[in-house]
Length: 348
Ligand SMILES: NC(=O)c1ccc[n+]([C@@H]2O[C@H](COP(=O)([O-])OP(=O)(O)OC[C@H]3O[C@@H](n4cnc5c(N)ncnc54)[C@H](O)[C@@H]3O)[C@@H](O)[C@H]2O)c1
Image (cartoon, rainbow, N blue to C red; front, side, top):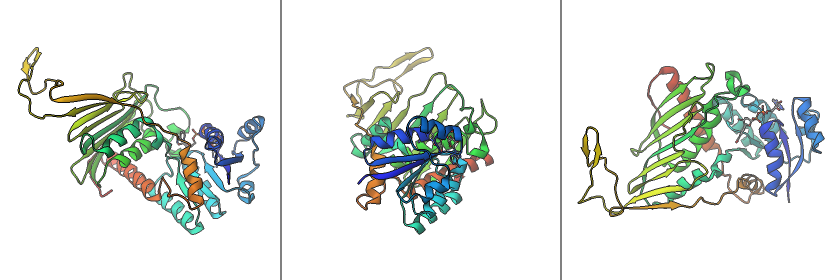
């Protein structure tokens, strides 16, 4: 049976949930609630029921799931009362401002015995799935380095995302997705990390960052978000023991170069102004296979399908408490690394 959903926070993302949750075909939208009356009016003008208060939502016994899509600093203020009222809760990312807040939410969920999960919807991004598929298949061996970048050229949005008090900044906004994705691909524990922020368009919060993480198995990962990049670097670059994979743009398929013979007899040197180089000369088809991997199929509506199946005891939660806590602790370590201006030893 379909679950009854209410969305709290009917802004940009609340609007997305109100529309797309229905496409998952497992929920009915009972209504929405926003603290701004004009947003409730907008919902009503579209034929969506809008509640008068959060209390009214919590008192409605028909409500099975509440999706929380308010600015980041208010997540905890909405999530905990919803769980205490016995509702299942889906929270937008980043789930909280820090790991202490997140622990309080997890405790409330455990006490209530209700679903509490986070909308890490970029686990359904096709570029990420393509990289994960290649890494998991082992077709070019084990990953020893992955680089994930997202580059825009319009600075950070001028709304609450540019304000520290509301949990603004690109690390919390996009970083949470990119770090979560990399954690889904890379095995092992992070033993050290180093993070830098950029402030080209905003002094208060980071409008971009770069993060290098080192794992206990010797592998490394690099995550970079930029909002002042008029030429974008490739979306994903992955180095494996038997080859490399590249996605230039998240709308494109993956390029793979697999090494089939490490040793080369006849290397054609590259001529540079300063002389010849064989070491840096590109390989040819004698020692490598070059191919493209088709974009994997993906349906982001699986998120709601999973949430409903978990409530019915029919599936395991896809975005788990441990995973969101790990990503939150990595982001906390990033803030500490930036503040101290140093590489941090961690166990994450
Ligand atoms: N997963 C994604 O792809 C994705 C994309 C965009 C935003 N988000 C997340 O969704 C959340 C909302 O972002 P947005 O872009 O929709 O912001 P937004 O500013 O467009 O909308 C937020 C809405 O919440 C309302 N609101 C604020 N406090 C409230 C409260 N206590 N109770 C009820 N309503 C309240 C505001 O009036 C506003 O209408 C953020 O956590 C953001 O990080 C996620």
